[in-house]
Each structure stands twice: as structure tokens, then as C-alpha cells.
Length: 187
Image 1 (cartoon, helix red, strand yellow):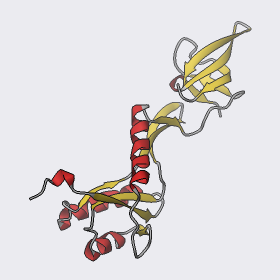
Image 2 (spheres, rainbow, N blue to C red):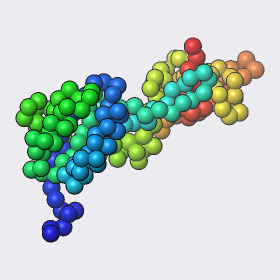
Image 3 (cartoon, rainbow, N blue to C red):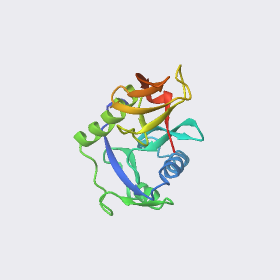
């Protein structure tokens, strides 16, 4: 038997009902294992990013699909049989393969770009604001020495996830640097 880790794989894209991506992934994972396709299907992949939102005054971390309406599936090269294709195609909430009746595999460059983007997001902490901050916007400070003060955003640094905010303290405008987790949007 050849070394299993050297087998070539191809990535296919499934078009699925938006909002049902996680359910499709869970179902396919179970069905592939139950039907004995584990050696052929290497993984069902759902690219997600972590975002946080302010709900009821608290920051809530959530995962958001990076490609809404799509699920990626990695299959051993040359092993996408009619049976396997039908099993995947007939899954509830799966609309079709990219390429419909003749599934098209992603090119290596596309796969590397997609997987590289996911790695990059994880290394950077992978956290983005679902509603970005805007210069001139009034925010409330919820953490640190200026807790409960309101301020006006003067500068937004998305890379470092920091804000320069002007806060009125005893009638004087004072510049303060805060990170995204220390503030919340008003309204």
C-alpha cells in the first residue's frame, strides 16, 4: 500500500441554502462516516471568522461564515464516484456542486488562497467588528479608567483594533487610546 499521506486531493464547492451551512457540514460529516466514505472524503470545510457584536451592553463573540451559501469538500483525486456525488447532492439544503452535473474542482491557487486566508485570520486573532467604527461617531467606554464616559472617535486603526477617542473630563477634551473591546457603540 502506498503512503496514504501522499494521496492527491481535489476541493469541490457545494452551493447550499444560506444559513444552513453548519447543518449541511454536520449532516455530511455524519453521513460520510456512516456510509464508509471516510477514506475518500478527507474533510468537509466551512470557513468561518470570529466577529463580535454588542448585545445588551455586552460584547458577544460569534462565528460568521466567510463564504455564506458555500461549503467546501476535499475528496481524494479521482474518487468522486456517482454514488458519492448523489449522496452529497441529495443532502437536504444542498443546492448543487459548483459546475452542477459536472462538478468542477478548485485550482490549487484558489485552495491555497482560501486556506491561507483562514490561517492569516487565525494568526491575527481572527476577530473583526461586525459593525465597524467610524471617525466622528460617539461611543461609550465600557472598560478601564474611563468606564461609563462617552467619547468621540478621532481615529480608527483596524489593524491594531485600536481607537483614538476624545473624552471630555472636567470640561476639557482629553485624547485616549482604547482597544475595540473597551468600547461599545451607542444606540
